[in-house]
Amino acid sequence: MESSEFFGCAVRCGKAFTSNAYLKCHTASVHNGNIPTCDICGKSFVCKGSLKKHIHKQHSGAIHTCKVCGKKCTRKSSLK
Image (cartoon, rainbow, N blue to C red; front, side, top):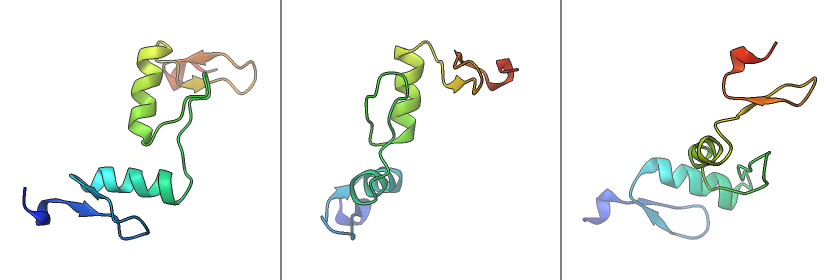
């Protein structure tokens, strides 16, 4: 790959990524401290997309939580 195909971190570390999306995830988690964390098990991820995949695979897709009773479900429309 040519150097023009990489997206470099200009913030502090100079790391390079193959896509701008990976660079944004890196910057948010490493340099801005915005680390997506699973509310169910506490595991941390670099990107929100990885967290969503984890929740779906490991916790049966339960990503919406009822503010009243704490029940978790896969669809927001299931919350009443």
